[in-house]
Length: 523
Image (cartoon, rainbow, N blue to C red; front, side):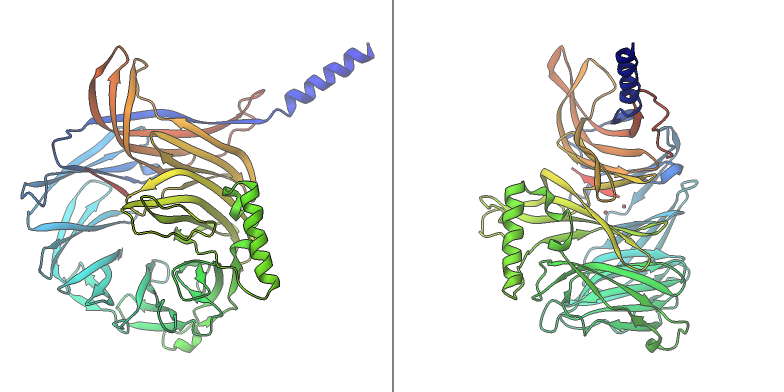
C-alpha cells in the first residue's frame, strides 16, 4: 500500500512539473496573386494593435511605365479597413521611407536634379498629402526621419556628410550646421520626440578616429557637441536612447585599430544639462568597454571545440599583454527600452564571395564574385538604467544569405522572456530566452498554405517582423501547386499571421503568457 501511494505521489509530481510546451502556430493568411512578368514590389509595415499597412507598387521607373502605389490597411484579424491609391509622376524615383505613429512617409527624388517630393499617408484614414521642395543637388541620401512637421534627410554631398531639415509647413530647407567635414561619416540620425531634438552621431575611421554626437533643436540650431576624443578605443557606431529628461544612454560597437571591425561593445551615459545655451553642460560618464570574450554567451554559435580554441587564443594574447583581434562586423538594431533599462540586439555578418570561407575571427580573403551578406549569429544584451550589463545571450543563425544588409532577427518580448526568430527558405526559426537562460532551444516552423491539398514548391524573399504581443508577420513570395497536380503552379505574395504560444501539457492555461529597415520586397 505504501509503495502504491509512493508511485501515485511521483505521478502527481511528474504532472505538476512537466516542461512548458511552446509552439509557433499559423493563425491567419492572405494571398495576393503575383504576376512574374510585371514589375511589382510589396512592403509590409506593422502597426502594433492597430493592424498593418501593406504597400503595393506596380510599374517601372526604368521602363517609363506608369507607377502606381496601392496602400491597404488591415486590422489584427487581417480584415481590410481601407484602401487608397497614388499615381506617381514618372520623373520621380523612390528614395526612402519612414514611419511614425500617425503617418507613413515616402521620399521621392527627380533624377539628376535637386527636386524632392515628400508623401505623407495618414494611417487612420488613408489621406495622402504631398510636399514638393528642393534640397541639395548631387546628394546621396542615407538617412530619412520625420519629427512634427520637419523632415530630416541625411547623406553625402561631394563625399562630405550633410543633414538637411525640410519644413513640410512652408517648404523651406535648412542645412544643419557644423558637419560638412572631410572624412566624416554619419553613424546614425535619431529624433528625440520628448526633448524635441535631433541627434546626429558622426565618426571617422581614418586618421584620428573621431566620434561625436551633435544635437540640434527643432529650429535646426546646434545646441551642443559631445566629442569622444579621449576615448580609449575607436568608437564605430552608436545608438542613443533617453532614460529621463536630462540623461541618455549610448551603446555601440568599438574597434582597437581604427577599422570597421568590432572588438566589442561600449556603453556610456550622457547628461545633457539643463541649459540649451551651453555645450559645457553636457557631460559624459566613464565609457565601459565590453570585449566579446567578456560576454558569457557570445561565442555559443560555434561548436564547443572551436569556441574553446578561440577563447584560448584570446586568453593567451591577454597574458602576453596584447589584444586578440576578433574582426566582427555588426548590424546594431535600435535600442529597445525595458521597465528596468534597455535591450541591445545586434547581428553578426560578413560579406560573402564565392569560394571564400569564414575564419575564426570573421576575416575573409579572396576577390571572387560577391554573393551577399552571410549572417552567423545575433547576440542580445540587457542593461539597467545606469548602463550596467545585466545579462547576454546568443542566437545562432544558420544558412542565411541576404543580398541586402537588413535586420533579419526579430524579437518579441513576452512577459519576462523573449522569443527570437528569423526567416529562412520558407521556414521560421525560433528560440526562447529569459535573460542569459535558454528556455527553448532552436526550433523550425514551416510556413503552410490555407489548403491541406496544396504544397509550397518554392519560397523567395522571405521576411519576418515582430507585430504585437505574441504575434509575428511573415511574408514573401511563394509558388504553390495542388498535391495531385504539381505541374501547374501559381505564384502569390503571402502574408501570414503567426502566434507563439506556450502551454503546460497538464494545464493549458497555467503557463499562458500575459501577452522596423519595414522591409521591401522587390521583383
